[in-house]
Length: 412
Image (cartoon, helix red, strand yellow):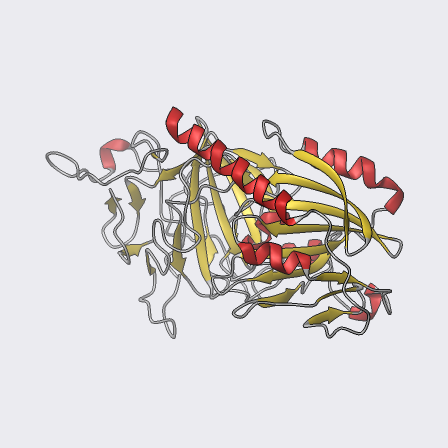
């Protein structure tokens, strides 16, 4: 573990050195140069956008309204936000507050210029991927920009950013406020699933496998969720069904399985450790329960370097273990609320980067041990990714999934 941490520090120092060698001042392009993308109301544009990238514009109006450039895997490359409810004169206070929101992380700070405008650059900044963050004063506005420091395309997009005098204002967009869209609920009558018990089954009533229990590989830095703590599948008896390709009450462990796509990281100090995260295909508005009883730590839109997670609910399960449900279509709980195993915490969706249907409809489920939370963004970082072990299901005879295989069928 010590050698791994030393190696991580060396890699981080090399990354910083590379960044500094490229220059922290983003150059100003010649006037009249063609833009690959522009948003006149935001007053920003990009000169160059690499192949297989996409610009995602926020569908809802938050206090940090903006656009996100993502790669082919939907991983963040650069996100530009206008902090339209913050005065530019508050820049130093905003930067200080932002830096203090990551206790235990040594964040470096330097003065620079971005496209010819005064800026403060901070790095490393936690997220789904590690980022650098610039606060920029341009045309009487305060902008916050995140860019992926793990992918050279992130820096390329960041360096192609430009600002120009905006035309129009946010009211012209006619956007619904993000906080109003947070608590969307199904467009039909529903009730809490009457078939699910209100409390977990006793150990005596839970199915047990005879003889030695199956084993699965747990990478260094990851942990297994303890079998002494209760876990359940997070959907109801009426999930999926007609028109979905899945029998009613059933889903699978996939499309993304352990270690696939953005499901990476066991114990990285400045990133979301999601090696043992699972995607479960569901239909829009399917009920989502917590994986166990606990207390809600965060319920809202993920922000900053986690914005690709959309609406999220994070539940403290006790003993240092947390759970996150992401990409929700609507949220049904608030921070500080106690939840049981039959509490509806939200509904399945495909939200991400300020949009609905950004991704195919599914439940992203992650478990974490001794992690940290950036409360302004609903962002988990550090700690350890936890493997779901002995997951209880109530339907189809009831029982426990000890270890979960790729694309395994799973019952409610």
